[in-house]
Length: 334
Image (cartoon, rainbow, N blue to C red; front, side, top):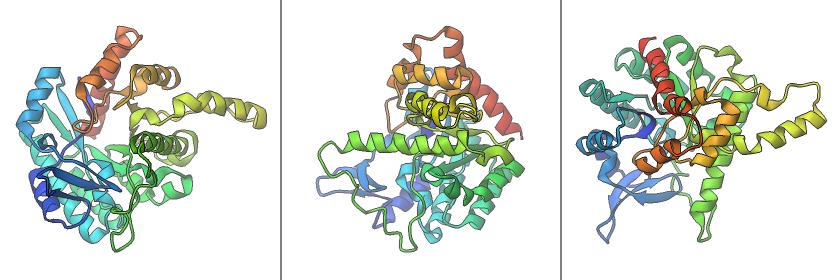
């Protein structure tokens, strides 16, 4: 199996985050527990983010041959002011490139970029491709919640068109103001079922991403750039029938949304077999990539979601490894 949605923190980046006083940072509380401050909350920090030997052992146990490693988007590291993000993203890129060089059969890295400074981001992507050999870039999902917002990221798509590589759109915030305030702001979900509301919020935002990337004309000028959207493209497989119904009534002269989707890849990280079945019906099995969201989510559950699905073995093989094999061959040889 090839895991196209996995995360990693190199040792020097962990050290830098430990030295930070505010989020994103790693700190030990009075109770002795280690946590990482991320966008609007904190979460337990486990060694699985940076323990390479343990990661390879788990991959061997589960039958995962390769992971594509990205910076965790919801940590907000790449969305910091450029004065902080340039250094931190370089630490990630250098570290993941070193890991991929040491274990070329097990890991592929994609670049984190300082989103607040478009020029610095393009320069870092060029370095990541030409000097480090990274296979693409990760961009924050909030940058695609409208076509107008996505246009601010056109320089990075131009870079991907020129330099090659995958664009992986992962849940994550836009850059904050120059002070960095925003990462520590409280979540808008203040009741005791915060993770239920946050799950809906993340999937809704990814649905907006898919409308921008798969249904608008934004990608028309970037036809050579492969794009991957996390979590099955949000809730689009569930709402597409209603969207088609609305278009049939109000815009009968236009093609139905379900019949005019751009050929975008989606990964199945953190999703279940029921959602996977709807996604296959909408996108086709050849557009779905296996992902675990390791180490945030459970690898075994991600594997079971595919293997226990009521789909034929050929489609399971495409999702677990075939599609990723073809995609990686493209982005690593450009």
